[in-house]
Image 1: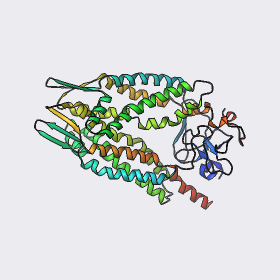
Image 2: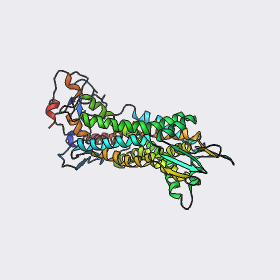
Image 3: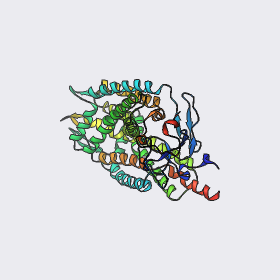
Image 4: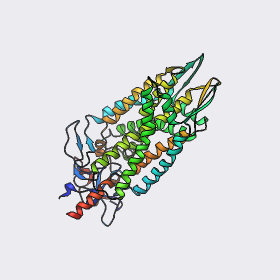
Length: 213
Length: 227
């Protein structure tokens, strides 16, 4: 096949992550800088797998206290009450409030766990040099990046609830220790998604094509 | 050209898909049309009508609304004769004083600082790109613009504020502030600002980093490579 079916890596070319320019390293050099925008060029993001795993494992560890520790503490005349994320979802569930409850359930519990599992699946696929379902896997990666930001919803809900409900001694709301871990899960999974290089998904298939050619 | 710079290709329409690295040639596009990667379906380029002027108009409007949204109260509540209200920054400040500095910093970054950088850098880019030969700082801003987009979460914050509002409405009277409406309009302006912008068009005009160095290019000088 001609150049039309080849990856830039196979042709010895580098696409710039900053400006998109395709360029060729100078003679006797493996990598260089983009002549247009001065970004340091690499064929693949450096140490993409190690960095993504590191962020992902850290996110998985924070996921446990994020769900077990309270995110909001409500102080009223009747006493002090602490709610975890899941208890918040249950509290919101009512004949009229169920859509809100669903938003928090999807954004705070389902999206973070789905993101961790999806990125682990992508990483394992690349490491086992899987050559099947490439198009589906890159679509999965794009949805992880698109949807990930929405798990921040609960951080904002708790922030502005606590900021507004400061009616001492009647009633006051404080953010709980779980909120820190939950925010860490959101940030770490976003960093994991940004450090993953989707071009790695296709490298295994590109290599096997070269072998069979 | 010093050895540290890569050599540009003679054909400026050739590019590698950022998601799958497939090398391909971009076709000439009609206004509003888009080109997608045949292997992974990633949108590679969408050609926009009048990208600089429309983006400038939307970015200016977004800047005005951003200032409004951050200078007036966003939410208020009244219950048994007592009232309270908060701004966007007020939420982060309250969190800080509640001994959650990390979360407070995160809220401040994603709801105030990143959107400000997103709007500010877009304004600078479209203003700087109007010159016949845009300076290199336009390229530097453009290179980092996607990062400000990733961490700017106005639309997510708006959903969070609405959920909080309905939660609190169970036991207090909630008063939506002017900032809440400004944020609602800002979400659409930011989406329009990004959609009307054509990064490829700006990159095409920008002064190259390698151009200051003496020539010795093996394939077409950059100035000739652009149509």
